[in-house]
Structure formats: structure tokens, C-alpha cells
Length: 397
Ligand SMILES: Cc1cc2nc3c(=O)[nH]c(=O)nc-3n(C[C@H](O)[C@H](O)[C@H](O)COP(=O)(O)OP(=O)(O)OC[C@H]3O[C@@H](n4cnc5c(N)ncnc54)[C@H](O)[C@@H]3O)c2cc1C
Image (cartoon, rainbow, N blue to C red; front, side, top):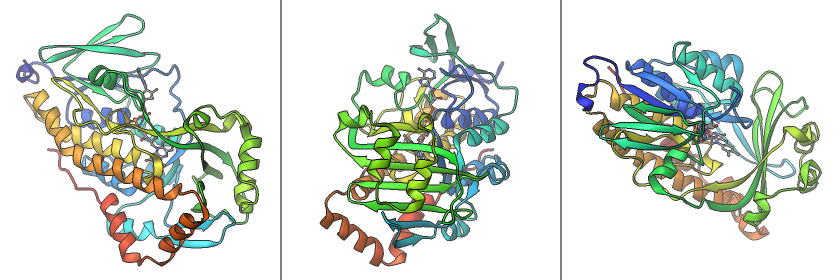
């Protein structure tokens, strides 16, 4: 029975996935006295992908549980205060002053390389939590209040709490829902990081460039490096099977602002990651008994809001809050899920809506979008952005 756990030994949480959500959950659950083990498919502790924004709600959420990532992120990444929206040739459309919103919330937004974020999270985790690499989960079984996880090499590991933090193609989610098909957003994303200098690429620079059906993002992530991403509308099968390489990407951005073409040009072909834009139907049931989901495994979202990682981090704080001192662990997991579903559902929906607006094709719709962004009062955008960036503080005793 789960209510015996905690009398003779701390409850054991097994976390599948050492991504952003899994590592954060390991750190937050250790803070509330749980015994934690992490199992990760990758053979090396190197995160897939490139860079990302860590928005201030994630930084605030972690602070409420006594984890301050700011000193590490100040050192490793770059604070960004203003996001410039521009046309494809670099003509200004609007500036969004995220720094001023973060100031109001007493926090900071960062742009950071994934490896640097991973290092900061590992620092918060400490050395005494086992992170088992080369461990691919295939499924799980539930017996009463305990779960047993199964691995490709035949290992089986028992847990009082099993957390699927294994990302977009989660095996733990598949065990809960059966096979699912992703929702294709009908555009491709190219991403990379690269050492970069350019007269228009100042410290803390962050900009989005728009044309019908196509976008480009460029951000300073510190230490002389740029993070860039580009998108282009295309049928899902073309987005899944992009074969035109860097030359094709350069052709797609022909005639764009000089800094856009320069940063693509400076990037080695092998450093460019290509992914189709996808999410999944929102899941109303994230687990049962001792099993739950967290991060992209629970609520994958399109990238438009830049909140996927922040939602995984907020989940990790919320699950520790629910489990802290709990005697009935399954009930604590249902409490965590109930508290997180409304906000994450809103983020999945808002990311989808914003993505549709951002990828509008055709000159007329995209002209209307530009006029909307140019002339809508700042107070309207500030209100929308604050509802995303505000994080309800949680207290863990
Ligand atoms: C193109 C793109 C750009 C993005 N930009 C941003 C951004 O700017 N800001 C932002 O906040 N978010 C961004 N995101 C979203 C963000 O990357 C995710 O929301 C975030 O990484 C989710 O973290 P996670 O821990 O849930 O999953 P992941 O980071 O995907 O981690 C899952 C981990 O589980 C492991 N794993 C998978 N299957 C198994 C298995 N069977 N057994 C064991 N281990 C397994 C994986 O190897 C991985 O390490 C972006 C996403 C994409 C695709």
C-alpha cells in the first residue's frame, strides 16, 4: 500500500527520460525527499536539438521550490528583453518588450543552448541521483500501487511512482493511450546554433522575420553563438522528408535580410536539424495508479509560444508540490494532473492558434496580420503575454 511508503523508506520515483522535464522533475522530487532514478534512451548525456528560450515563468516556478537557475543561465546563456518582429527584408513591424513584463514579475527570460540548460539542470540535481543512460523503455505494468518498467535489454525496475517524461513519442504515453497519430501542422522547421558575428546581431538580439507562409527566428544565446530557426509551409509528407539540404534552405530565404542569409550561410550543413511541425490531441487522462506523464509526453505543443520547455519545468515543480508529504501517492498524482491540465490545455490551444496566424500564406492574410501586429495597442499584447508568463507561486514545505 502506498500509505506504508515513507514509514520505513522514502518513496521511489522512476523517471523515464533525462530531457528538460525529466531532469527538472528529478531535482524537484529530490527536494521533497523522494528516492529518484532516471532512465534515458541516449547513450551519451548530450541533448538532441539546438537551443531554446526559457521563459520567465519557468525560472519563477523553480525558485518557489528553492532552485535558482539564474546564476547558471546568466553565465551560460543570454537574457533577452526585446523580441523584434520584422518583415523578411528586416523592416520593423513591432517590438515586444518581454523584459519589461519579466521585470514586473521579478524574473528574467533567457535564450540558451540546450546543452547549457542541461548542465544547469544537472547542477541543480547534484551527483547522488542515478541517471542510467542507454536504457530504452518499451512499456510498463501496474500491480496494485506499484509499477514495473520494462526495458529493451530485458531489465525490469519497480517504482512507487512512474513518471513518463519521455517526450513527443513517449512509450509510457503509448502504454496509456495505445497508438496515436500526431497532428501535422503542414510546415517544416529547420534549426541550428552557430558561432556568429554580424553588425546587426547585437548582444541580447532576438528577432522574428515574416513573409507569407514562412518565418525565421534569430537569437543571441551567449558565448558568441546564434540560434536560428526557419519555417516554411509545405505538405506533411514533404515536411517529414526534407531532402534539399542547406542549399534548399538558402533558396527558401533568398532575398531575406542580410543577417538571415549570413547566419544560414555560416552554419555547417550537418549542424542543421530538420523537424516537421507536429503536436497531438490534448490528453484528458495522464495516468492511473502510480503512473503519470510530464512535459511533451503529456501535452506536446507547437513551438509558436516558446513554452514547451517552460511547461515541462512547471509540471516538475507541480508534481513535487503534490507529492510532498503525500501518503496516498496515486491520489497525489491525480491532484498534480488536475492542477496542470487547465493551463497546459490553454497553452496547447494557444500555440496552435498562434502558429496558424504566424504561418498565414497569401499576401492579403499576411498583410492583415502585419497591420494587426503594427496597430494593436500594446496593452492588448501585454495582457495576452502576461497570462502566459505569470506563474502562480507554489510553496513546498
Ligand atoms: C523545433 C522546436 C523548437 C522548440 N523551441 C522551444 C523554445 O524555444 N522554447 C521552449 O520552451 N520549448 C521549445 N520547444 C519545445 C521543447 O523542446 C519541449 O517542449 C521540451 O524539450 C520538452 O521537454 P521533455 O523533457 O518533455 O521532452 P524532451 O526534452 O524531448 O526529453 C525526452 C527525453 O526522453 C528520452 N526518451 C524518449 N523515449 C525514451 C524511451 N523509450 N526510453 C527512455 N528514454 C526515452 C529522450 O531521449 C529525451 O532525452 C521546441 C521544440 C521544437 C521541436
